[in-house]
Image 1 (tube, rainbow, N blue to C red):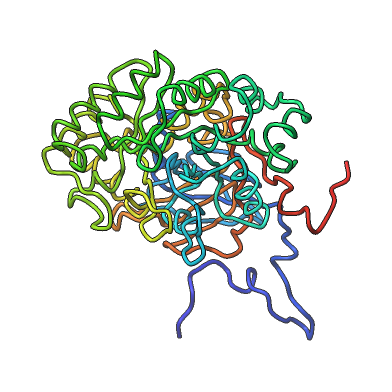
Image 2 (cartoon, one colour; image 1 turned 60 degrees about the vertical axis):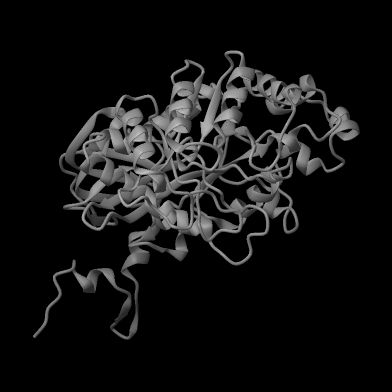
Length: 450
């Protein structure tokens, strides 16, 4: 006769006893811990690479140690043979952009191990924080934030000085009403962004306007991200930076040869990335051994090698997906390539496994903290420190897939499938930190009383 060895089923399943309802889970309550047992924990920020247990309590990392003994009410995940890392941070990932009606890029990101995604939609206006913030309120499985489109930021009557005040949360409402918007929701939520992106591929701005964006981002502590595909445009943007911080988005794109020779283009961009005020990111899809997705641009083997060399030398230490391929507003890659690229870079010896994991955990968290001037990013995400938000990605090295994605203590995906009860786990990320609810999604139904 078959007997299960999975726990003690009579003690963990609802049923009936003595002609009445038996509900052991209800008796245990919701105060138990989630324990990840015996996984290989790799936490680059804390220099951890060891077989350990992790206990999560509510939305926080509660304990990391050699052995955590489960107690009544705890839930246990067997992570033996799996990698346990901080939740992946994808700081350049198109999510819910434009007319997204038939695909599920946000859920796809969760299924692929992303716990925090930042979306640089080409059409992002001052309404983007309220529109996507409302989606968080209605229930999304990951933490997310947006960059605004540079052209759109300059599309109101606000001066540069007033825009700086806006992003600091210091613009008075009368000025906003007269020169920016008659929509109070847009005005109040507009500062809840992480940066501004120059979309060269869609809009070409004057030198004067690019200088205005640099002035705004450098003084309001926002990320300035530039579309990096044409090396000549990248050189122009860096020259206009005048030492102010600039981040070159999807900096492997020039190596695909759309605007000039792929090798020479890649060399030119890597030289820009050596400057002190310039940082950049590489697309995971483009770094795959098989040259990645056929739905996006492909690097040549020679330009790809230049990217590997830049990673190995530490010139670039951040990876992003720029996904997703089946989204309406697609980028050059896909979140499905994030975990495989991390594993393959370690297998090829380009980076150690810890260094490879850091490219989508500790490293982007550090950059975001530096650019925004907010330690929230290094304290709360990108690491597995006690007290940090419980964002965790569990990876199977053999199939190169995310086995579990845990966001703010909730299991939101298992074996590349979204877990429906994980809806609502995510929060709204801004340069000021994260809120779990923006209030926009509740306006039509309720009024919050304080």
